[in-house]
Amino acid sequence: MSKYDKFEDFMQSVINEADSKCRSRFGQSLADAYRVNMETVTAVLKIIDSGWWVFAALVAILVLGPLGFGAALAAFVSTPAGIIVVGALAVGGGVAAIRTIYKNRVLPIAVKETGEMYKSDFESHINQYSYIDSLIDRASDTLISRSTGR
Image (cartoon, rainbow, N blue to C red; front, side, top):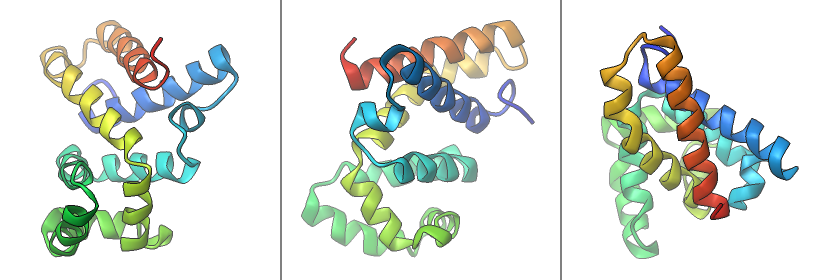
């Protein structure tokens, strides 16, 4: 499986390409552009690797306000998606890492929104290498523009 036929790999490529473009265009990382710590980017990549549906489930609770998030987190960690997320982030502290992601939620939310924008296009062009490469380029630009307004 690769970025040409697996959406999770495609989105990881989008994030990595956006980071590379940020560094060359603006002299800062994608994390810096979003004003989040690098651990958030690493955690997002790990969670996406566990499955797009897992990442989407996590982002769904990130959009809740502080009171709703606390209650939702307690319930979330006992669901299949929550167990996978805690497992993926075990080295980073599991539930504590999810709380850190919540504090830096602007990036995961932007990644999910960008992914949803391009998902059907990706699925319609699986294994079309030049098209997928072009799609990664466009999606990475979208992800950057969400942080910089450019």
